[in-house]
Amino acid sequence: MEFMTYHDFMFWTKGMAFVGMGIGLVAFVAFWLFLTDRDEDKFADTEEE
Amino acid sequence: MSDHTTPNKTFWTTANIITAVILVIGLILTVKRFTMGLGSVTNLSDDNPWGIWIGFDLLCGVALAAGGYTTSAAVYLFGMKKYHSAVRPAITTAFLGYSFVVFALLYDLGRYYRLPYPLTIFPGPTSFLFEVGLCVALYLTVLAIEFSPALWETLRWKKLRFWAHSLTLVLTIFGVVLSTLHQSSLGGLYLIAPSKLHPLWYSPYLAMFFFISSIPAGLSMVIFEGRLSHKYLHHKMDQTHIDEAPGVALGFSKAAAVVLFAYFTLKWIGVALDNNWHHLATGWGAWFLVEMFGFVLLPCLMYAVAAREKNLNMAFYASVVAVLGIILNRLNISLVAFNWQLPAEARYLPSWEEIMITVFIVTLEITVLRICLNKLPILHEHPEFKGAH
Image (cartoon, rainbow over all chains, first blue to last red; front, side, top):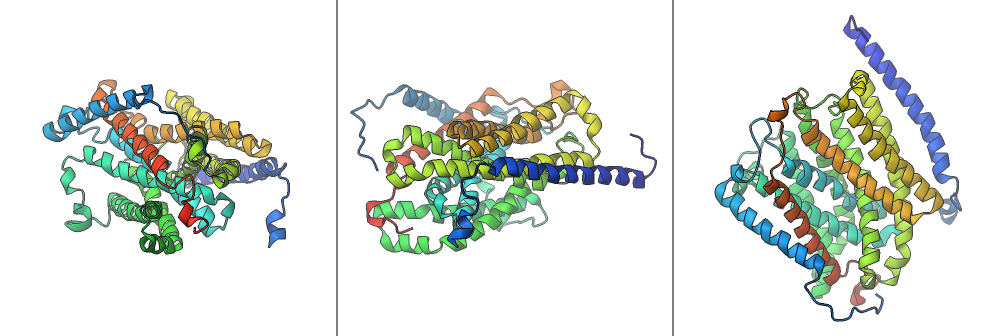
């Protein structure tokens, strides 16, 4: 990837970082659902309070 | 504590003989190091002033001792009392870990007797190294006080025990603050070397990466040691510790999975921000991918499956991979990917004496840990202080 100006570089890298964050956040939701899917009582702590 | 007693066994078991041999060789090399200087036992040079003693003993030692602050924060700050039985073993490991980090540092310092100088004679408050030194000194003091109740209980010094125990919450907060500072500052040390460290490992966010990765490192060590304690020191554990051990392993697995997932994502954002994608197609890139997928994502998924399926064996294997991953990451940053542009003949390879001294220090730490776990009320409550903490 050739960058002619510093703006080009920042635009590309920041853009990729934001795309990465978006993918990461969406993937995290799926990961969290997978992780907690079989928890016996998801609201146990809330009920105790 | 169970009544299981071992029959009269000889002291000279295979493990003890190997330990004794390592300790004797280590002591001989120690004498050589401190009488004939660094050059007599190391391959360090002006190009490579930090070797395996910093890369392994210090960086890995500090990261793997993070179980102390993670466990005590979970129990005393976040109120997760179901993990209470894991606090003392974690604090003990952390205290010994940091003690031996400082011990190992003495080998690496040319003028080891000047270790207190940064805190007394000429502090350099603008240096990351000053912050690391200050925080490690303070945190070691915090850990010593947090560890001390086990000692006072054994000695039946009730007033001292009460005094130390009453400081628990303050010490926990202090410990979390200090750990946040120095775990990240260890990564910050390498910010000064962007031209020496390979771009895939160098990042302006190195400090954050070091801190975040220390959390699963600490959690993994608690799981790993918990399993080994359960296997080899079962007779020293009381019923509370035995009952709570599976919950600790599975709960910590879930936490480690979440943090490893966040770490994995952030590492890729780091690659994106520095536009280092083209390096992935090189040999260094392949090595980076091995680290990221084999030693970050793999243990993350293993932990997730372990927590989901309530599989303790999987949690243990995940902890092994995660611990190896942290060691690999720290060695990559400090040794493998450091000075990557130098020709092969100018690269650093540790001498056998350096490796042997590292083995000696690790063996010594394990020996002291074994003595502590056997002699002090760490895996069980002292009969006179049941429920007092």
